[in-house]
Image (cartoon, rainbow, N blue to C red):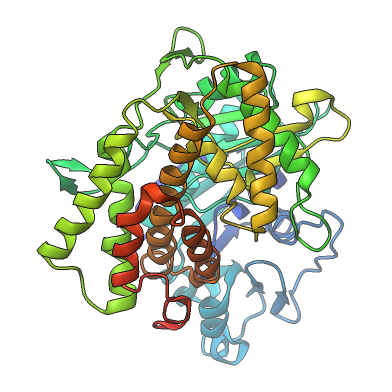
Length: 512
């Protein structure tokens, strides 16, 4: 029975369309994939292969000779791609000498004339057959395995979305993403400025974890692109820097937005630039000065109802420490008594947040989500990204997110400078701004955020195979130690001290 079950078909009226299809597929294929490319002489296989490899290399001028005589050619792209042309293959056994299996194990494989070696067809995750028609030009018939078919369907849907937005012939290229399942691409089209395509299919909810609900529902994690579109619009209307939404398909999960540039808030040594962080604090103070709206228009008649950062969300987030960070250190899950003590301490702190100043908290204000734009003026000099999980909650959360940036070392002196800057701006805006109350809320929310992040970074390591996140743990521990100095966190400080949760040596070396 063939492994290739799903089928797709694309009409390719010219060589440019063939090259676009090759580039679109290169965006979603990965190490271990085998692409079998069939067709008669002159059907366009070599043109397709050349465009595919150039897209992987990110070099439209890369020399890609046909390996008709050498039979195989390796390109150090990401992932590495080995291009086989089996037209002159004498016997299928020669595949071993050509290193076919090793090529599959260590990279991506593209095979022309796979019919000359049936084993290549048997191992293919994608089989593309190019045929010529009398009127419509070339046609690509694509069959794929179940896993590859999901990725192929997604990249073809993205192309269709761009066509509907008026950019059918746009060039697409991979763009650095984040720790989520979302994908980003840079999009270039004649007559248009630089654009970014967000590919964010509906969130797949996990199993129930509490009260019959999955984690995402309790934590109010965005399940579609609707919140992103709505918050981007609200930020822009408030006079702040945010991506302009050029088009969106809320059901399919595609958003086309303006590319805000590559300016960052760090210097050449990857240290925070104080003035740029202060500018971000000024934008945040302006945002927080306006009472939060629960209902935000998004696109057309669609309205996003901003969820509350309620006790359920607060508590499920800190519980990540018990579920992931604790066993990372201890080699076991906490027992019921330990969980009860943890929940008792945190519930008392959450009680104190009952009358905290509310705001639409953007949730992830750290340097990779900030774009510095020196050509802009005022509050728009800094633009904000990655805010789809925004909730209505204590304004201090966003201040803590920025002043204790999880991705870069924030010296205590700079953290205090940023706090003073924000508080000064808020006090000037609001004569009754309560500095002492804000300091208490800041301590609680910074501790809540750091506690959550310790769990998230270990989860990214253990569940998602991303050990690089462990290097951030000592920084998060140091932030927690600062926060725990506030008197309101006395019980939490005693708890974390009793459990030795801030032993950075153990956290960094466990299971590495």
